[in-house]
Image 1 (tube, helix red, strand yellow):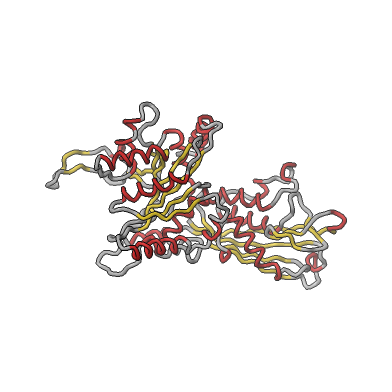
Image 2 (cartoon, rainbow, N blue to C red):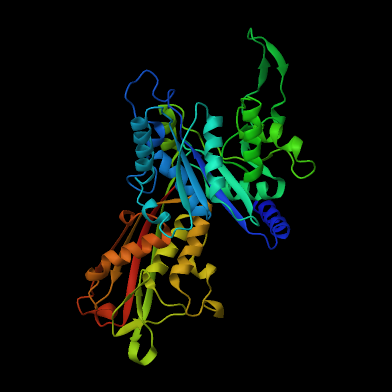
Length: 445
């Protein structure tokens, strides 16, 4: 789907959803046994709970990465994580704890639910994926009680940790317009239908086929009702799109169509075998960006300008002169991220000639640019910065500044480091005429 097509769909959606709130729910399906991944091995960790080396947190897991991508992209009213069911109460409790630990292995989740606007649910699965999804849909539906809102649910495999923001946005736009959507890719190999003896029964046209991925996105009330009908009929469906087409569309009249396919992503693989993790790691793209900025320091008492570094006000008798709030550190970081992703620079995004950016909060400017970088599929490996500042001393404020930058970017504090040097009372830095910052960043996708 092109950017123009997506924009057109979102415009149509806004018109049809005028004066109606849209609530989003997320179901992460992770209740399987990982039998194929751990074939022939005993006492193995579920694949969803394994560390993921390409995640921007050093201690992230497959499950945390699959979930984090959604929370970084949209705001959700409810998130349900399914975990393996057991008739043994102690084992069931242990399964839930393992699921919770795997999610919170990434420090991002320590604050992701702190404001109370997103309800986090851990839901025991069923004997099949279909039953696990139904259990999760029942759970999130019970939490979303606003009768006037349009409720949309994403159903995503917990073993698909490489999902991109662009895929999330495109499937949502298509589901809001058509009722249901799923990303899919045209098969590269010629497909054949065979009989029970292995003989070709039908020669399929590859151009009319699609290998579907997740997230599969639906109107929540309708897909839940479809699951209930499927359960009453003892029907076992291959995935939720089949439930939609068999148990929702025939009862919807003209309201809903069959599931719409949007362009999938070849990197959005489902980890099924151990080789899948190795293959994806080998495909990781890495880019380095460099950012630099310099601001004149002026007397705070005379000008009212303050000294901001990384979104934190540093007590000082001098502040940065600039068109925005003058946060030289955030400006350098913004340029480094834009440069690494080849999306532009801070001047092209926020021209100093444009009066609307006068006095702007640099945290908001960085966030806007970072949203674009994320939408292009990039994740932070690390950010390293050097501040050239004679006074005041930076060290007492370093941890607060690192945490502020990490919050703005939605990454772990461990991904950000900042150090300071003085000018040894020489040059423009040493005589407190200017403050300078250099920044390097590593992006991955």
